Image 1 (cartoon, rainbow, N blue to C red):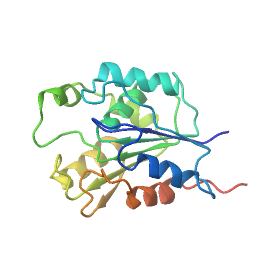
Image 2: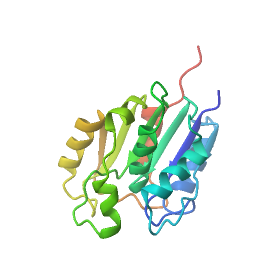
Image 3: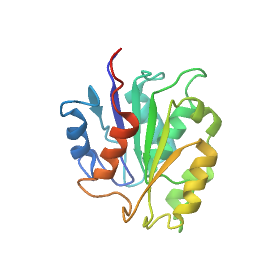
Length: 193
């Protein structure tokens, strides 16, 4: 069974921005962690909406993704992944998710982010669809400065393991070694037999 890493980019991002190209190259370099890496271009990234992004992800993954899929979300991409996972039929699971700069709250919400904050997610259903949930946060994220509260929310709501990276800001660099390290240590390839 092919093992896939599917990355959903951030607000105003693209497959070519941030750490996505570098990370994709790293995880495919032997010994490869994944057989393929997909980073779909999400519609209208400057104004992401639940109504456009969740169906766009469903078009990439299908109504039932392979159980050997690891999902990686960045910022609003995390919200997209949770909402997609909550839509899966009961009993279907993916290997796990790595949620980078993930949030349930932001310090200074703007009008376009309000629907993402105010529209409920069936978190129990999303949690049931994940084999493992790992969240990477920063102690210096300008959008969610109370990283301790953010950590608690992810632990309580999703049963997530949270990794806090000192000085990571919003993880917008072309290389993000902490994300690669977390993928390797939490989602390393299972050893054969």
